[in-house]
Every structure is written in C-alpha cells, then in structure tokens.
Image 1: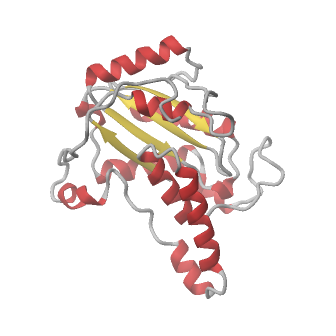
Image 2: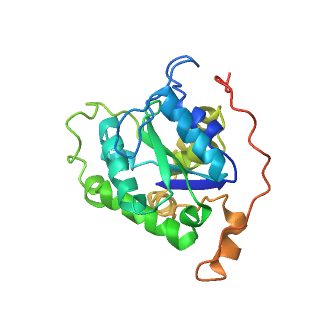
Length: 250
C-alpha cells in the first residue's frame, strides 16, 4: 500500500510527525535517514526543513507493505531506500528523508520529500506506477502468496494481521498528521472484526478484493486529473505552515 499527498509549505511539521516515537514518550524520536540510509543528526534534519521552506513544497509518502509478508522493520528500511532511489535519484532538485514506524503490528515507512514542484507533481497514473514499483521492490506478489517466505528476523508470532480497510483508514489519518491516528486504527480494526463475524465467505472475498482507494487529497481531484493525460494537481486551500516547535504534538 502506498499513500501520498502534498502541501505547498515547508516540511517542518511533517518531519516532526515522522520522528515522533509513539511507543515511548513524546520526547523520544524515530531515526530519520537520508537517501543513502544514513541516520541524520538534528542539525542535518534542520537543514532539510530549511530547504523545504525554500522550495515551498513538500510531499508525504507512506509505504506500508502487506502485513501477511511479515516484513521486519529492517526490511522496510532497506526496501524503502531502494524504492525511493529507483524513483527519485535522477531528479536534480528532489531531496527526501524517511523513517520507519514500528509502533503498529505492521512496520511502515514515512517519507518527506521536497524539491521543485514540477518534479514531485503526480497524477493518478504516476501514483499507480509508484505502487507497482513499491510492490516489486518488496517482492509482495510472491512474498504474500507464500507465507513461509518471511524474514529471518521477523517476529515468531506476528499476531493478528490488520486488514486492509483498517490500514487504509489509519494511513489516511497519518497523511493529515493526526496525532490520534492510532485511535482511528483501533476503531477501524474493531469495526472490521465485528463485520467479519458471520459474514459469508464469498462476501468476504469480494470485500477483500476491493481495490485500494487513491489518496492524494484525494477523490476531490480524481475527476480533474483523469480528464487529461497528465494534468497538474489542483491546489488545495491550505493554511500556511505554523512555526515549527519542538514537541508540537504535546
């Protein structure tokens, strides 16, 4: 699953959201890495945020591999780095940082990208191709069909696999930098469990085969984007990014 959206602003709040470690207290942070996979120092993170303010454009991407593949956080880290390199390394102004969230039953990566808007604009076809490339890098087609093809460092007991609908709602909340996204995940999971009780097998299979919804702000712009082969994204009315403060989520 890949979700993405953009804002015409600096990436300060997005970077803070990615770095927040929700398994610990509000002062703990998630490692933020550069395109080479190296952990960034605080001054280097600040340099990236300053660059995003200069461009006045940032894109948020969430890469969330299928939980049935039992991907370890280390795999999510390495595969996300490979995926981003293959897609954005040749773009002259694009820069990005990423971090892996381990606070759910399904490790997933958040990417903050900045650069010239023309390099980071995406239409529906662009996003579809990104999803296909992410699935290829993660080897999802074979990995998720073969439950024995799991990482050596994956947990022995992965626990309950969170269904796609619950993950959809969770990541949509994360795209908006909702600090209570975990509550949305819990509500969606409970609702899904209740719906599954007594649901006929054929009906469940149809529900599970429902295609992933497009985010990118998302349905509001789908009609306009489909009208041309590649039409620039329509601006959303957004407020200016507030001053970045340490611990803004507290």
